Every structure is written in structure tokens, then in C-alpha cells.
Image (cartoon, rainbow, N blue to C red; front, side):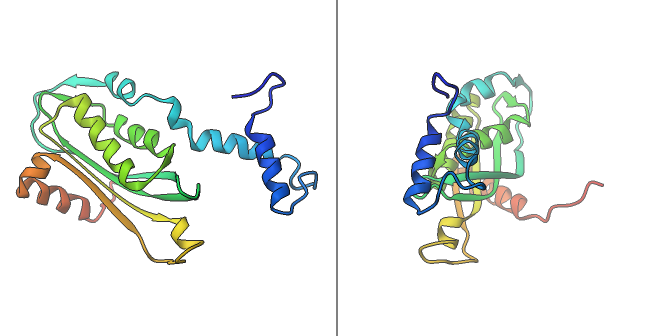
Length: 195
């Protein structure tokens, strides 16, 4: 978004922030910082401008397949809504089709869409699972997110080795211990090289 003169409304906010921090926004290294930060923040939060259902609905296919579909190790980067500091890691997404599958590339796109918003990891994990459940109506959905949070590393408790794991299990993944166990075994399995 930009105002009538083409400047992003975030820019004066960043300039004020720099002044409040004791910096001189006119200093050589900072003159263009408000514009750079504005563009970065627009990119980091571009998920607000995307629609999850529209993203998936364009790539649904009728397929006679009833076994687990797993997309593992999807990297993501997000901003914690409490401090606007990054958290990042990997997401593992599985579902058991009930007549429909979604193009595999749409799952990482869905992960990125929700990551590119101010987030908490718990909501992020649920949003991915709920969207797949709503759009595909599969027999089950499982999502596990593993991440490190810079708000825990750079400030506060300053724990350098702590990580967070969240999960959202629906349908057969929630009800059937065997299905859940298969999913957990698959995401723990060491990644193999295909080269």
C-alpha cells in the first residue's frame, strides 16, 4: 500500500521508531532504511492478501487413492505476533484422501501463506490442518510444526537450544493410533538423498 506520493505509510512509522531508539534517520546508513523495512514487512506479511481456499481449489483432482499423502520438511519463516521477531522451522503435512487430492506444490504454498502473517505456532499449525480438512474433506489430516523462536533466544529467557513442536491431528490421525504412529514414524525417518 502506498499513499498519494507513492510512499508506504509504514515508512514514517519506522522513521519515528529510529528516532525513539536514539538514532538519526538522516544518517547515511539509515536514510533508506524506512523504505527497506516497509518493503520487508509487506513481504513478511503478504499472507494476509491471499485466500487459502482459492489457493487450494484451483488444484483439486479426483483420484482413486486412499493411502496417506505426506509432504515433509516444508521450511517456513514467520513473525511472532507478540514481539514481531522471527520464528522458523519445518512443517510436515499429511492427509488421507477421500476421493480428492490436491497438487503437491499447493501444500508448501499453503504453509507459506499462513506463515506470512503475524502468528503463534499453535494457530499456524491448526490453520494448515483446518484448511486442508475444509477444502478436501479427507479421512484425516495431520500437521506437525517444529521451530525455533528468536523471541526465546534473543530476549527473555535467552535459551539457545530450545525448540517448539506443535501438532494438529484430525479424523483418522486423531482416532486411529496405528495411522498416527505411521505418520510419526515417517516424519522421523532420516531424509534420503535422491541424487
